[in-house]
Length: 457
Image (cartoon, rainbow, N blue to C red; front, side, top):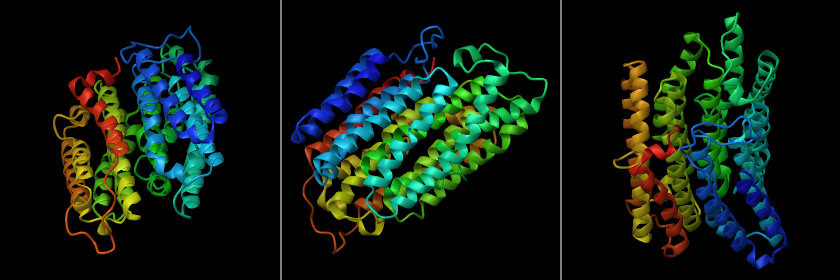
C-alpha cells in the first residue's frame, strides 16, 4: 500500500521545488506514474483483507475504487489546464497540493482496515473538497455551496463517530477483519438497530440519498471542473463503499429498520430523473442524474441480496467514469460559450462536430445502452431488487425511462437546433480534449468485455 501512498505524497514536494513553468507538466507526469504503479500493483481479485498485516489493506471492495481514484487524478489536472492558466504560480502549486491531499485522503479511506481510521480519513476528505469548491469556484455562490456541503457532512458524521465508539465499547475492537468474525446478534435488538442507523447516516448523506441531497447540485454547479470530477466519480462512491462495509459488519435483523430507507431510495431514483427534466443548468442536470444513479445503488445495497455488492460495485465504477466524462464535456461547452444554460447552448454541433460525437458516446453510456458496462451494472441491480420484491420492477422501469428521456433531452438541447445569435463560432476542439474523452472511454470499453473485474470476489 505504501508503494501507492508514497508517490502520491511525494508528488506534492516535487511540484513545490520545480520551476513555475513546469508545474502543470510535472504534476500531470507524477500522477500518471502513480496511476501506472497502482494498475500494476493492485489486484481486484484479492479475496479478502489480511488482518495481521497493518491498518491498511485492500480487497475486492476497495481495489476498484482505488484504481478509479488513481486513474482520475491526472485527468483532473489535464481538464484544469485553462483554470491553471489564469492563476499565479503560487496559486497553481496550492491547487495541485490541495488536490493531491484530497487524493491521499481518498486512498487511505479505501485502504483503511480499521473503522476509526476509516472515519478519520473519511472526514479528512472534507477540508480539501471544501477548499476546492469555495476557493476556485466560478461564482460568488460557491461560498453558499461550501456551507451546504460542510453542514450536511459534519451533521451526519457525528452519529458515525458515536456509532464507531459504541462498536469499540460493545465488540472490544474496531478492526474490520475481526468484526467480520464476531456475531452481530444482541440481547437488545434496539442496540443493533440504533448502531446500524447511526453509522449509516453519514454514508447516506455522502451518496447522497434523496432528501439529504441538497448540497450536491450546489456543490457541482459552483465547483471547478476538477472538483466536479472528483465529487461525481469518487466522493459519492465513498458513501456507497461505506454502506457496503457497514451492512456486512453491523447487519440488523429487523426488516422494518431498513424498509423506509430502501423505499425512499427507490422513489428517489424516479424523483431525481423527473427533476432532471426541468433543469435549466447543464451541470445541475448532470448532478441530479448522479443522485438518481446512486439512489439505485443505495436501494440495492440495503436489500442485502447476494448480487447487491457485485451490481453496486460495477455501477459505481461505470457511473464514476460516465459522470466525470459528462462534466468534462459540460466544461468544454462552458469554456467556449461562457454559459451553462441549456437554452443558450443550442446548435453546438455546428461549431464543434467532433465534440458532438463524444457527447453522443457519453449520453449512450449514461443511458446504459448495450454493450456498455453501465448496462451490466443496472441489470444486476434491477435483478437483485426484483428478487427481493417483484413490484420494484415498475419503479426501476419508470426510472430507466426517465433516465433515457432526460439524457436525450440533454443531448438534443445542447447539440441540435440553431445557433443562438449571442454565441459566436468558437475555436476548434483541442487534442487535449479528445485525449481526455478517450481516457474516460477506454476503461469503460475494457470493463464492458469483462465486468467481473470490478466485482468483489
